[in-house]
Length: 159
Ligand SMILES: [Zn+2]
Image 1 (tube, protein in one colour):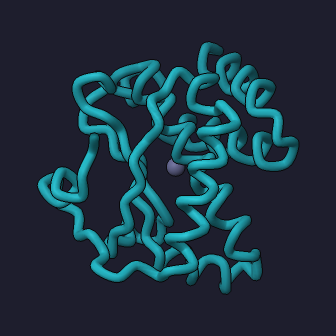
Image 2 (cartoon, helix red, strand yellow; image 1 turned 90 degrees about the vertical axis):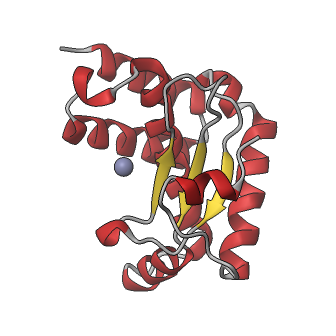
């Protein structure tokens, strides 16, 4: 099981007291997604969730996948509660929507890490970014992960 210590070892700073609303909503969505079978559908282990203070120049979250061997190196998702709350206010999108779409986006990145090893070698990162964002949007809008995953598979395989 991934621990915060492993995340800190990788150079991130774990938030000691993350915004409780962000923490509660994010954990609840992740559990809900796991129960609904999204990780099984994507061939991913359930990622661990970590709240960090890093903001990566405006990004809200980051996939944590030290290697593409998820049996050896379980994946995680790092979330910046401060960046999430700031984005929710800035774009006037409710917190739950911001968090759920962010999580779905990061699942997409984890899927790339697992499916393709070093993602940049297969799909340029701009293209990966665009594909996972489309996946997150479709999955969030329709609630149909399988269809969203099919779209992502097709697009990732396209030249
Ligand atoms: Zn991204």
